[in-house]
Length: 161
Image 1 (cartoon, rainbow, N blue to C red):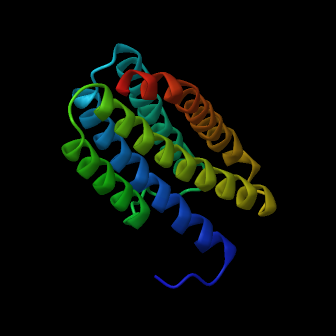
Image 2: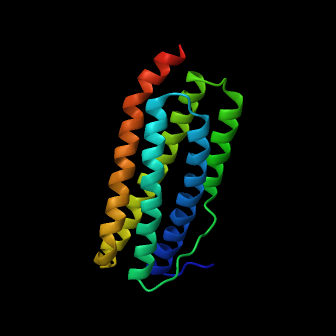
Image 3: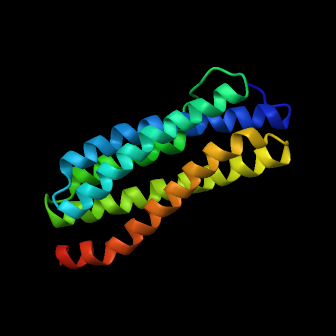
C-alpha cells in the first residue's frame, strides 16, 4: 500500500505494531513454557497480561480514529520470534535457556519502545491527542518491562555460570 501522507504512515505503523503485539503474545506463551526460573516465569506471565491489555489499547486507538483494526506483517517481529525460537531450541534447558529467553525478550522490548515512541510523536504532531493515552500506557509498560529484564539479566547469567 503506498504511503502518501502522515495519516497513512501512522496507520501503517499502527498496523505493524498491532501485528507485532499478536506475534509477541504467542511467543511469550511459548517462552513461559520453556522458562525454568520462577522469577523469569513471573515476569513473562506479567508481560503476557500486559500484552493482552496493549492489544486492547491498540484496538481502542483504532476505534478512536474510526478505523477497523488491521495487521500488516511485521517483518521485525517475525525475525525476532524466529531468532528466539531457534535460541531456545539450541540452548540447554534450565538457567542457560532462561538467559536466552531474557535476551530475546529485551530485544523485543526495545523494538516495541521505539515503535510506541514513533507513534506517540506522530499522533501529537498530527493533533490526534485522543489516542495518546493508550499509546503512552503501552510505551510505559514496555519501558518498565525492559528495565525489569535488564535488572534481572545479571542474576540469570550468574545462575547459568
